[in-house]
Image 1 (cartoon, rainbow, N blue to C red):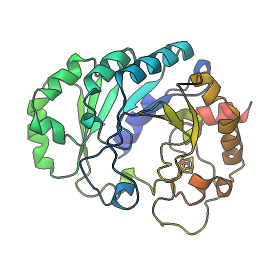
Image 2 (image 1 turned 90 degrees about the vertical axis):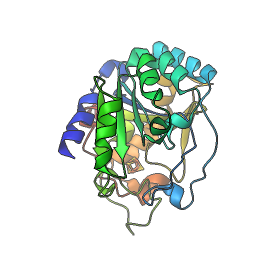
Image 3 (image 1 turned 60 degrees about the horizontal axis):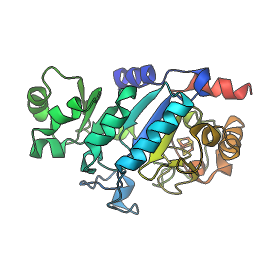
Length: 264
Ligand code: SF4
């Protein structure tokens, strides 16, 4: 857990030229092939075959260049990214940013050419979320020999890494009176180039804009995001739908970005 946290911290480097935005979580598909008990898909979240197109990936590329984005891109999101049939093209378009992909690995086990194609497309690193058995590590070692990969052990439960996803599960009755750094350093970009206020907002899906219409800077520094941040600086999670029943601690990563916004 601590090693993985340190690793995640190392990816989210503060950069004032990017207005504190250090990490983009890309959600290339709304489709998943699993139904895990800790995921909102096990209760209300729909499984939809909606996928990022190459045209959208091209526009995203242009928006990132325009922003001079220097941070990390993690391809993970709310679905299983390898179910997007265009995933190799998307990685190729975004490979300047050394993308990292998080997967349950099921598609790779069905087609052992996928691993090579991912890295040939410019993938920097793959993270396998291993839910079944660490005995499969031998398979991953063989498939990814010489490649940059991590196997994340989730076989004993996903809890150390997860929270209640913006109140998607009833784990607390009252709002936590504390801040949260997520919207200060990280943003989620969906398959249709809409942006969500927080990666953990699975329930309300509060959109802060869409790159089809606006620049990344206009959205990231726009009035809606700044209003959310003001509430979080004031520790008023209770005033934001997604935050009022969220149990995420939210302060492990992103402190420098938070402090930068505090001084604005
Ligand atoms: S409190 Fe939860 S929903 Fe709100 S910003 Fe933090 S992680 Fe996101």
